[in-house]
Image 1 (cartoon, rainbow, N blue to C red):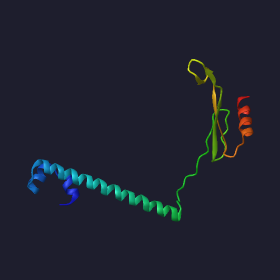
Image 2 (image 1 turned 180 degrees about the vertical axis):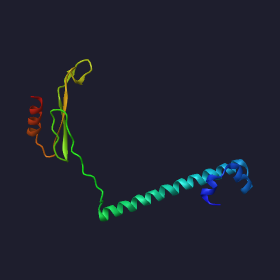
Image 3 (image 1 turned 45 degrees about the vertical axis):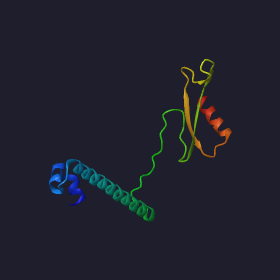
Image 4 (image 1 turned 120 degrees about the horizontal axis):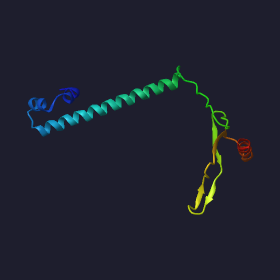
Length: 130
């Protein structure tokens, strides 16, 4: 019998065809099911590898252009490669022995170019806060 036929058959059918006890039929059925799963995984993996190789050789014809991010606050998004900086107020809490955000405080996220200097980051933060 084929693996797929064995996996689809019931345990009683396997007992009659193979002439074995119920436990052996269950083990045979489980074995064939796991072999079918492994076969499907390897086939799908091979298909993905083949598709990847074709895409790398010829390029994808259906590439989607990246959409620009739209900001709703004062922060402005910058180009593709960006440095994400979060600016806000933190106070030191003696009871927690750590920095905490004050009630009503706001945090702003900025996206700057990767090659931004310390002064550029500070100027962007000042423009955002003020």
